Length: 397
Ligand code: ATP
Ligand code: MG
Picture 1 (tube, protein in one colour):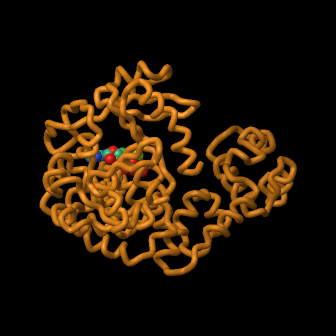
Picture 2: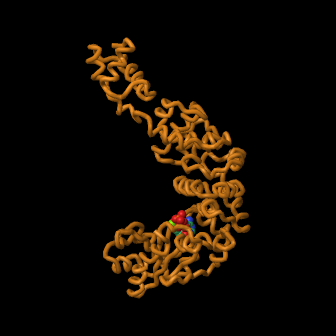
Picture 3: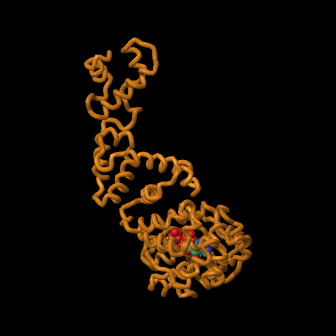
């Protein structure tokens, strides 16, 4: 959906709030991305109405974060977060504030936001409210804190990682004061929950200018306070010598593992508090990476590894070897495999027992493995009769 259409669809929400006597604006990332002509994510709305007042204006609402002033409004099938103008105070331990106070002024609300490019608002007619010169920062491709950087990073240390991820997402550079404050404040990242760091790291790795983001982590000495990255600056520098553009986020994490060679891959990923499924996938893929052939894949190794993993390994291997990736060819070859999974095999232990007239036992496993390989390698067709014939021809029945 086009950006303009997204705002148009949300526009009646602003009208309704205004009709009820409140101020309401689009704010944050949506305004920034609209001005940059990038696809916008969510349309966030800020209002002078208190959460209870927002709930009176709309019939379908969900309390998603009412203590922070956010109400989710369901409007024509879509959800919109409407947040009451607020200031933040009592930042404890350099992380999110303990207390928020609702205010009636937009400017106060914009002031608590992290960077000038994120501190603009837009009314429903498209007029931009920009008290901190966010527009000119956009023009200069600059990431600059609203107010003194050291103060803002001390309030919430995660903002330092957000600076790095915006550098990667937008390809922007940091304003010098913002940049210089990083190394002085980086130790405050110790107080930040790893889950929040992971979210920002994933967004950084997803950005089109990943190298720029990583450079911010390095130059700002943030790496010392990120799981598994402390003491790895030279490996990260090495990472920057590659063109990371073709890699997906998952492949970039795999590449980090390949460059870092952690003693225990599982623990390294666990330190990032990744969900168990992600850890399992990456640990397994890394193990396959270490033992897989790097340029040629037999049908059977492609089958065993699975397409997703094989493609991830192939992209990273190709990047390291400085050769073109054969991932597309792997896709085609995987399509053509007679079976994709052992479950698709036309025979099971039941048939084998009947055919051999024998009790079940360990022999069945090796038989099935042999049949599986022969089917994948197209030595025998995947049907009961053909497999039976083939076993006979091999003198196994
Ligand atoms: P994205 O496109 O990735 O969602 P975004 O700018 O919308 O980018 P969000 O994390 O969704 O980022 O935050 C929405 C807005 O809230 C930001 O634009 C910013 O104004 C404000 N914000 C978010 N996190 C912080 C923070 N830690 N400190 C201050 N302001 C913040
Ligand atoms: Mg957002």
